[in-house]
Image (cartoon, rainbow, N blue to C red; front, side, top):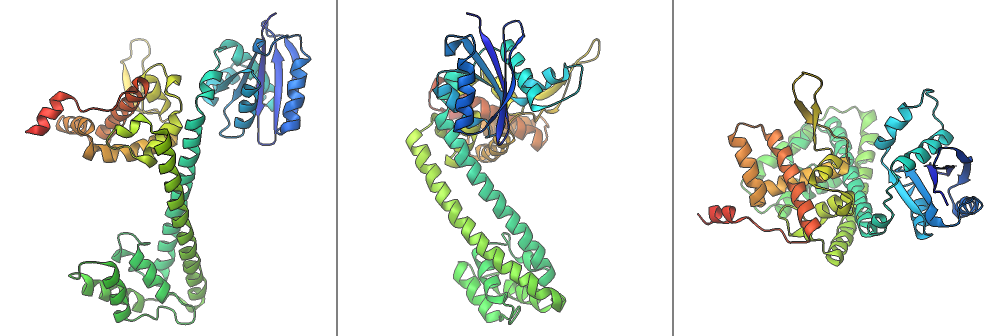
Length: 405
């Protein structure tokens, strides 16, 4: 019995499916189904009506849509179908190969059925092994979202305080530190705006700081920024109201972040990935990096993983023109690059292998950013090696001897 190739284009509320045979003839024209249990069951029943006796004779391809395709893909895999998940970049060339530029969901499902015929190796088995990694990725994304919201609150708070009391934010490295929050809570009152004394400011700073050498000067500067306020009366009430709301929102987000960190720590303790033995990778960065990478067996070598992260250099060569390399491609997972960047900052200080790579490149005259990107690639290669071989990270002997001196 010949194999049938099924292309599925998934969106938020529906999906379109088209089936072709090995000669690219349409066996089942593109049909639309609801993204729910009834819709998926109707789709499975339509497949059963086709001249194919076994589920294993169907090759199903669908495009990665972030999260919308995940439930459908998981359902089909558990039902025993072979499924291939496509990166949108893989399908871009096939779309451009069509003479007519028309793009619809039904046409996309036909393109996917052609794609699964060309790339018939499915990732069904690997997907079933990826469930823990998907869980790590989701927790990592929750942590990332909360962190982003905290950064937005800080930016909005700085914008408001610059209008109410210019120069206040310059007195604190972190505008939302404990001392700053207490001072704002005490002074940002609509009934008595900026009504706080130097003694009250001093008491708050003394409670939160261990050293007192700089305290008198800081108290004077904070009080002066409030006394020099030229904010119009009609803006005081809305701006102070926004400051109070932002303080409440910030406190909620901090509590949420603590809960997520605890759950991530518990998850990483249960899974105990070998990458945590690498200096520079902790629970948070490890959860995000491994969650974005997924099953390491998806990649044939470390170069493939580097390309997936978008850390591979752009290369251009044509005819007699020279072999040129440019900036990194940045075509891969942006979250993976971001958390790899965070891990690299720590690894340069605490990981002897990464520190040696960074110092060597800097001595050769490379800029900080160039050396840091090279270190990120090195760190990613180390992650690939320890996960692939399931061996703990170790410091090479030549670096151990160097550390001894």
